[in-house]
Structure formats: structure tokens, C-alpha cells
Image (cartoon, rainbow over all chains, first blue to last red; front, side):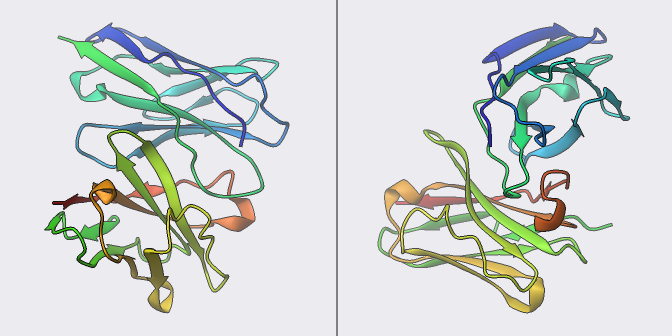
Length: 110
Length: 118
């Protein structure tokens, strides 16, 4: 699977929107963009995924650039519970495993 | 409904001993994965089971590691002759679909087993 690049850390204030960026310049046409997050002392949990169009669900929104070389996970109103490591992962058709990078540590300030 | 469960939640063992870690996937999920998360290595894939197909063992770090999945449900990860570098959190995940549309399925993770090798 192609590689992703994310900032090591980001900070946000509670109840403010958060935009978490991810670069994936070598993405292929069939790669899906997945986001997972890992809260402290828990296993990762699925957040959202998309292919070309922007996606919304109850947890977040995913904005995908027109050339698909980057994407942004949007948390519309951050809460303290959103403090976690967020992983941007590309998944191709060749396999089902998740390949985790370093992710972005999100800190939410009260 | 019930999520993925793992047991034990914590395991402390002495170097050289064998350990078995158990994973109960979500009922009906055909795909099961093992990952481990250690301080210096991040989250890494170990092994993947999909239905009755031969497992993908490409992530197992050595032949001391093995896993089986009985009856298409419960899985056991076995580490023989444990070493200190095996200390990590071992995570299990399951998904509904797996190989046929693997780039779209959602993986559900258990809480993990923290293994400490003294």
C-alpha cells in the first residue's frame, strides 16, 4: 500500500473544529483512504473512509482533494474524548491488512 | 452487540516460556487479523485469516510465532520461548468481508492483550 504523511501532533480547543491533514502523493486509482483513531489504552477504532468524493458520518467528515494526493479529516466540534492518535491509511486491492504509520497525536484543550 | 474480545487482558511471563493469547471475533465476521503494538515499533500486522483460505502469515516476526483459527471463529496466537523483545500489546481485529473487498471493509479491534516478558 502507498505511504501517507501526517503531522506528528496537533492541538485544538474544545468545541472548535479540527482539520487533520494527510498527504498521499503516490496513491493509486483503486486505493481507498481510511482513517482510524486510537484512544489511550484502547485498540484502534474506525472513523471514516472514502475513495474520491467527500464523505460524512456521525463521527467526522473526510474531504478528499480533487487529485486525491491529499485528504483532510474534519472533526466539527472537538471534545476532550477526541484526544487520540489519528491514523490515515491507504488500502489497495491487493490485501486487507491495515498498514499503520506514526499518525497524528491530537491534543484537545479544555 | 458484543465486540471483539481478547484474553487475558494482561500477561506477565518469564523469558523462555510459551504463551497463548485468545481472540473472540464478532460473530459472523469472516476475516480475523492479529497486530502488535510495541513502544519502538508502532502498530504492525502479524497474520490474517479469511474464511477457509490459507492464512497470510507474512507479518509473523519469527517461527516462534504461530496462530490458528478454529471453526472459523476463535483464534489463538501462540508465542514459543518468549523473548523480552516480544513485550507488546497484541491486538486482534475482525471484519465482515475481508479479501473480496478488502480495501473497503471496516476492521473492529479488541482491547488487546498486554504481554510483558521478564
